[in-house]
Image 1 (cartoon, rainbow, N blue to C red):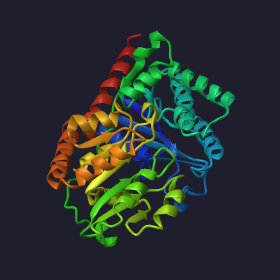
Image 2 (spheres, one colour; image 1 turned 90 degrees about the vertical axis):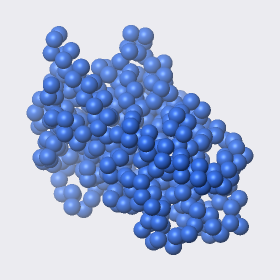
Image 3 (cartoon, rainbow, N blue to C red; image 1 turned 135 degrees about the vertical axis):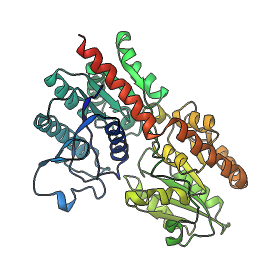
Amino acid sequence: MDVRIQLLSPHFEPDVNAATGQLMTGLMHGLARRGHQIDVVTSLPWYEGHTVAKEWRGRPWRKGTTNIGDIVRVWPFPADKGNIPARAAGFFGFSGLAAGAAHVLDKPDVVMSLSPPIFLGDAGWLVAKRHRVPFVFNVQDIFPDVAVELGALTNSRLIGLLERHERSVYRRADVVTVLSEDQANNVRAKIDEPDRQKVEIIRNFADVDTIQMVDRQTAYRARLGLQDKFIVQYSGNVGLSQPFELIRIAADRYVDRPDVHFIVNGEGAGRPGVDEWANERQNVTVTDYVPPADVPDVLATADLHLIPLKAGLARSSTPSKLYGILAAGRPALASIDEGSEVWDTLAEANAGRSVHPGDTEAFLAELDDMMSSPDILQQMGSNGRQYVEQRLSPDSQAGAYEELFERLVGSANTR
């Protein structure tokens, strides 16, 4: 069955520095290769510099055609990640524009929108209701839970309002897709028993085509002058969800080891704080995001990747960086809630180790042990690569969404 899919996403190619941009671009191209028509409503590219790219300015929205279907891009109301009220207002404005701009596209068979932002769930539902077609709500991070856990939202009345709104979007969706069992349990606990069956787990994929296992002596490593070092690296969003003090403590522990170096590669609201302490340490290097084509090079640079996440956040957020790390054939050490997607995947794939958040001694002990076992690290990396090739390839995840969309459309056509 050929399905016409309309996607509402905050980012899409060429805006692929954002994780959702990479994921949705890869997923939609995978579905197109399976014969489906893909129309997209997204933002004008803005994520890299948190301002609309110069070549895209001048008009608040644009319609075009890609090799997978039609696309409409609207003004994103860009705001710095650290300015929560401005960012929320920007998401609200973008979602409203997206809902309006979608009317210029042909009628879809099914609509899917992403969260965050949560307001894009309302936009997707409005578009689906207009065309009387099924609506799939894809949840990457659960809002407002993440903001509450981080202390970014503290007003109880506002939190209550947002939580009621969150539950209403879940109820209106035909299916809610999440990334892990933790997230599924979170969402199911917020809706009535009859609606809980609509929550389905479809994990994100690893780009095993673009990201390959290559030699650790990368151009990125050479550019930083770290050719002979053992590299311990964090790559991704430098936000408020990650306890970067763990990396600071680890760097201090190895300050007398000239063969060990720490890298933090990324940007975000937590970057100024990381820069402050990193600038005082010669064994730490902080770098900006690299162009998408260079991401595989950065991932391959590390001898050991770190995945830190503050306690309690795994119920609402799944670090997508895990899949890129495994695809690059590199091991990982996570500080994360037990039973989370990252914890279970690393254990199942035998591709790394995990410790409980806040247990600094256990984290340092595992770091010591892993760094002293190069053969084990190499085997873990190979295990991770094999795991994602078999279970989390773009094609396999496109197949999971294809099955979902065809099931929904078939059911809708028989009503």
